[in-house]
Length: 317
Length: 317
Image 1 (cartoon, one colour):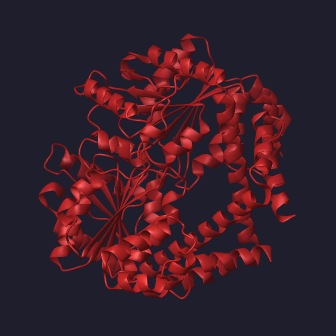
Image 2 (tube, rainbow over the protein chains, first blue to last red):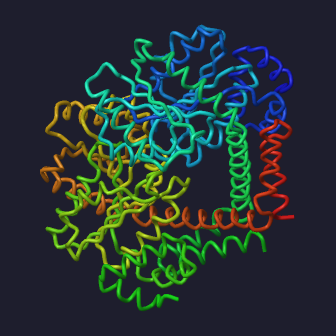
Image 3 (cartoon, chains in turn brown, red):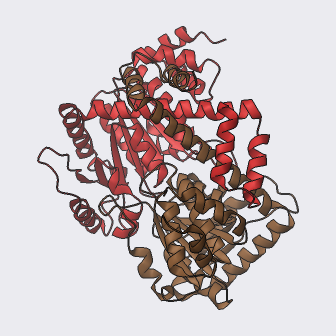
């Protein structure tokens, strides 16, 4: 058995090995997970959680690294959670991020963790909040959560973060494509990276136009800013940090920070409860009952709603 | 009340308005949803369901349209389901697909439907199977399901389809990026579109290399082919159809088609059951009980697992 209170005390002091070990515990759904979470609960809620997302190739890892540099210049302790769908070959996270993060690897005030979601539906929703809590309890002022992709994973990252940065780069597809990717719903701050390339101004202009198409805003509403960067050269990154500070202040003043954190907690509790019920299905009946019902659905003998009724009746009856 | 048996009979005859109306019924979770699903169940299981996915900008809509053209030349009836995350502005599907699909709009043997997932987690898993059943019952030989994105939505589309096509285009990011996007797990057929552009051969080569890195395959295993296309000029599209035919035959011969459909049905039944339980949470307690628990979690007074325990106890106790 691991001495959880001792480990938590070491993590609070910022010892990297203790932080890494706690994240492994929450990621691996260890039997001591509940003990860990109970010990962390009173130590959390201080860190500012920033999500970064965007299509492959826009420079997410480089931008994350540049943000770490900017925050370190302010003397802040920074946590980084890089969420990778795992490769089918290694079963683990890829090395790409770590290579780009190397300049921060020896900084004792920076905690970097790659997390594989292993292709699970809800993979991010399940482990990321716990890992964020570990980094929060370890005294990180800022936690940057970087995730690949558009679509569901973007929506999930937005649900985990206080502020969401959506990254774009010139030449990654036209306006309709961007809108299809659903990014206009979730960004609090937009960054057009690789701004030294052709088309950066056009991308920013088009994005600005599309953001302006939304419903009329009230005077106090947040209008997501668009910042141009060349993350590889640290250009424009201080402006991104300034935009984040501004959003943080705006949220605090408008009660939005507390509201977002409440929504996040509610979603997390519900996800854990539903997952526990799902496991109860399997414990009570094995998979055989579900398989028999599914076979009938596949054969057209039963529709899926009636099959679901039978499954529920067998659980609660 | 809608006369469901009459509507289903009309859909079987291939009347577009009846098909559209049935999809609206299943998409909108109408009170008659269960009646519709029960009526459709015995009429389904004949259509070959093909999923298309890839990052924004690779040419998914153009490729879907080109596949429709190829299948129509074979005299087949084709259904298209274009799954769009909705725009925050219109609340509905965007027009991009429809514009590109216009050449098929007046063909009575082609049914095209855009579906908004409205940013819901599990949005695709929830309505798409029902819409696919409608198109199946309407006598479609092939149903093409096009979805935006990488990550979760890709995994979901792969769960819905008999065969999954992953689209790539030259210059959309390097190999590590592709692997991060998780695409190597889910493709049965890979298509490098825009193959008349620089870098197409390099993209195909790199993809081929990465696919080869997988575990040793048994002699009977499916090796996903890589096909190069210029969908806008209909180039290479017949080769894609040939690859799909080959995969369909391979799956039938190896029991894989039945196995995939069984897994799909099991997942669907479980999703419906879990959603119904979720709704029961809300019915029994309103949202107030969950909100109170979430507030404690947000304030650090309670950890999320203990909160989930309380929520479950209140449901089943």
